Image (cartoon, rainbow, N blue to C red; front, side, top):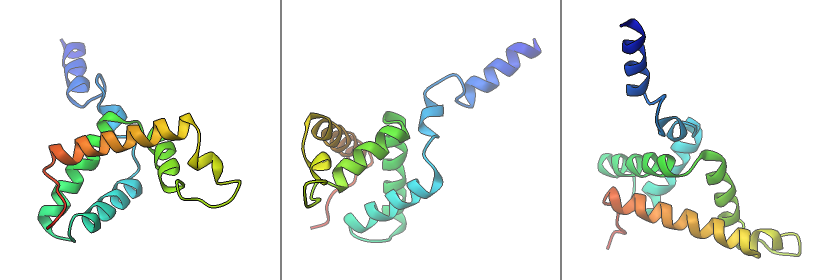
Length: 118
């Protein structure tokens, strides 16, 4: 009986589901995402903070942190100058990672009712 209770508790806490993946984002990365999201969508308001927090939670549930870091690196480095920056700008892997991140972010933002201010 006790074993069954422990199992139910662990599953409820996310140990038996994809929730563990959603919790692999460090706090600093989540805060940075939320701050950048709030700046993108019209500023620091409580409503925007909740929407951007929702967005990063949804993103984290779909994309492991290591994949996010790789895709974000390719995205931020897209405009890198010079020969060495070519690895961030060009190639199938760079395009695929940027595209997957953009799609995942767009889905998260839509689900959290984020839209560009007019």
